[in-house]
Length: 319
Image 1 (cartoon, rainbow, N blue to C red):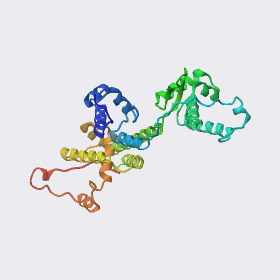
Image 2: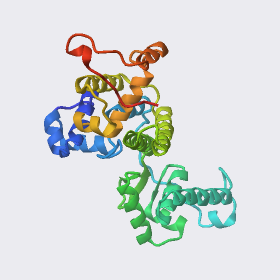
Image 3: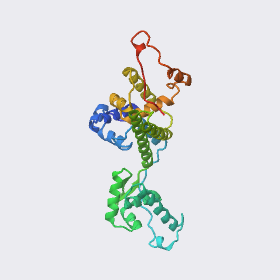
Image 4: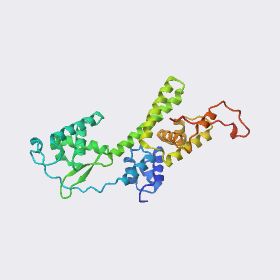
């Protein structure tokens, strides 16, 4: 099996394999890599439904530029029995203010959908000095049963939010906040905005931009596409390549195609198609000038001689 870091081509092959509904093992065989390498790559970049090679490559670059030194598990300093009740602390913020902030943070997490105990556990870990606590420490801080903490930790592990570290020489684990959890949340949000933009554009194509429904969906597309662009920045070279592929597909089809039709024909997720269309409207190398747009929007000209001269082309409208 091949080793080393995954390349941009590897990630595009993974995305293509997921689009073809291949298993991780089948994708790994294509790449000549271990199945675990593929599964970890997909899990840390949005999961099989949201994995996008371009965003995964950006995330990998971010991780390498901001890599933190390996965490060394150390036994936490014992907490004085009366530390929470006395209202006194030898250093750091006032314990009462910390307690109020943890409650506020947990309430926010509950409001966005986390179960109550899981939200409180996550708030405790985020605000812990080391970013890690044992089950006993969480039980004491939250004043809940060990079973409740265990259930909440299992839920958060399922979301890939935290991990376990074994304390050397001790028969207990510490639960640790994953340093990349916020990056993954950002990537997932970016994927969802792209999907919303793609679905809205599909509806606008279906109903027609001149209808009230089509206009509403067109406005929805513009909104979510704008958010997606602001989150992901200018298109990468991979996105520009995708844009050129979409343009080539439209040239070959010689007829207008919707985003869903392009996705089926190219074997891509609809989010990839919408990103490619956005890139085509963003990059100066493939964008039409105002004069060119005006000329193409004028009265239709009679077809000239030759096969290509009589063709008519179109592409999905970009924001």
